[in-house]
Length: 205
Image (cartoon, rainbow, N blue to C red):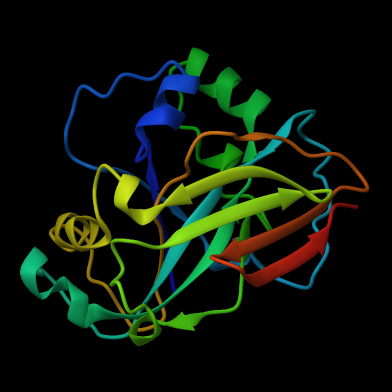
């Protein structure tokens, strides 16, 4: 199982991070399966970073093996969605970028991919292009997004990624974060929602 992540996929987040996209193709990076943190497990702050930030995202689960998938058929390749967090060691990421080095270590560390409970796709009466999701930090909503706001839809992401990488059953696609990212500290309580349904709930240790 692999975790495929998309960067810079929401315009307002790109604006808050002073990012201007020069390429219309999705920005892709990979996390290992050791990055997964299930919804009820605590997140322990790593000792190599002084600023770990949350990035809340919709996560789609691949249900079928595929290569060179056309966007019009991509909906056949995922069966469920949840909300997750792409934790980022922001200080380490900035240091690596400034040195012109790969920044995977700031994204791919252990437990950096929070994963909520899945909802079957067929439960969304308005389709997957109108999914509300949000993050609550210590009881206050800090991020809110909708799948309609994504620059590249999940079908477009699948079509692009499958040109290079064979998708397999159980693979996960993190689709990017809306605006409102921020740091976490010991004692923080994070809860993730799709609409009003809570899909993850954990504390930072």
